[in-house]
Image (cartoon, helix red, strand yellow):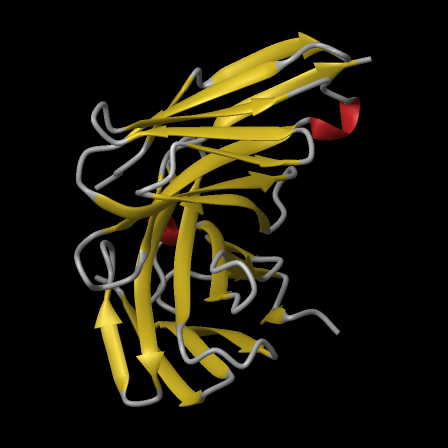
Length: 112
Length: 112
């Protein structure tokens, strides 16, 4: 099993719909992150959580919300999707071994 | 806002040649990390260099850090076609919040 699992892998949704992206990890770390990647813009931080009771906004949190259901689960929601939220979304958690982040395979979201 | 800026944006070389990518950043950091991303997939952690280190090696990778110039370089020696990917630097800022800020990346193409 992958250390960080994201579902779904791909999703097409309509403008105005609510959508949830899910992330689970087996690394055992308290910290989890959601990033968004747009072509030519690198990764930008949406939300992060240092434990179940600690949720923090990142650089681009507007239009998004998160839920930390358990140490291993961190979900990202788009309450009312809009086309400029079309992007590749990544969940990540740090590694105890090398302090780098382990990323999931990503969710490619298209809002039409 | 982006912390790291990679240079060049794109690099095309032949197999066997060395590839050098540079990263500049703006604020003081705890560490700087380099990641690789194969087309549309999750990022993979390559190497971490701490602010009190000047050079680090891992296999064919060599990373340098110059905190006075707020810059880092990643050297891949004896490049292979399999090294074709996008490479990102990411900084862990000395702000106490322990999040990574990514640059926009360098796209490396290694031709056989």
